[in-house]
Length: 96
Length: 447
Image (tube, rainbow over all chains, first blue to last red; front, side):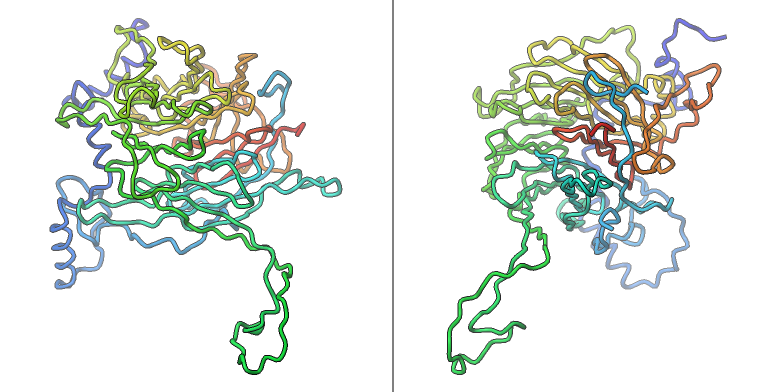
């Protein structure tokens, strides 16, 4: 039986807390905002990136066996993992 | 069937759709911004692949009544390329975040386009004549032997097939540490502002190596960061006034005459919140994704996750009008947080006379609100309803209980089909709606 006193928003909040008990109390705080500010960051630093690139050249890598898992903080991305950053030479399909 | 848009019953009809039909949407083809120019003659789109496509409205002619002012491709060019900032290990997307037109001052058209880091001023010009009859070179361009020339002639201008050229005239780079979310041309037509998450800069259109920082909300200690700038816009008439919105649902109006650094606002707009209704989601859904001044300059409109609010610039303590876009999503916030949809940034726009406003939603639905009659309508951008001049049928979302025929239940909505970008012609009832990789153009039947 639905508790009509609880607002739909609060009910949703309860659902979220049930699924993720360790979720911070202040979601709009630093964590969320910092994630927004550092969007696009792929490597720890440029040295990391260059070393990874150099390793690519030396080693014979197995053909892309790894699934396309999301690049998370635990995983140090390599140039191989990143989607192809090819420059768009193809014309937009809107212009057809 | 009653429509929305200024008193009379307008009927929105399908006019055109641009883009590929196939289900497999390439990331680069996703439209990221749509903007009419000041006359409405040109319509520009930007996409995630860094490309700009400009459409031009065909001149209406009596005998060709079928193409009632259709938009056709005028020019297309690659505005931004993907970059990698080696110093910060930052990938810079080529996605065009915003396009803003400059008012037309001569035969050429100018627009500003920006990605996360760099703003570019593009000149789009036509060439329909070329000179023929040079003395020193023949028609293929090969140089003629000057000693063989026995007579002189004056080159004449001959007509040629229209060629539209786009060239970058200014590149405004290296002024933003964070991601640019807004650009806005000032009413003085000499300056413009650009805003990122923490700072706003003022530029002169002629000067690329310098810009003034006019707002800086970066705290000394980043741990103390509580809000970011989400959008900014110059006032349409008062060149000293601009506003910026925040992730906490507030808007600050600043006057550049007051100080060089506008960290202290002149006006602060915030709707009081009922503390008892506060939840985990309150701040996230109050984050303003877009702010737009009315054409009159008297009002401004803000879009947050669930609603659109109209504010009177003379009243800071609450909006004068609030319109619910998709209130039925309030009971779905948990899953919308999990799939990140709660962070989607919807835009909003006014019609030319400020009597109606429009914004997008999910399932390729978009909403229009008539400010005078208080009527609202939900329409859908869909290929299924794309016969020429087919009238759009109002859509309805069923929130619970018995679902009527033609209604769609909340759980059946496709959250991947989001309409984030819409634009309204500055003078007529013509609208452009971006549905992922397709651009729909709708016109009022009476147009």
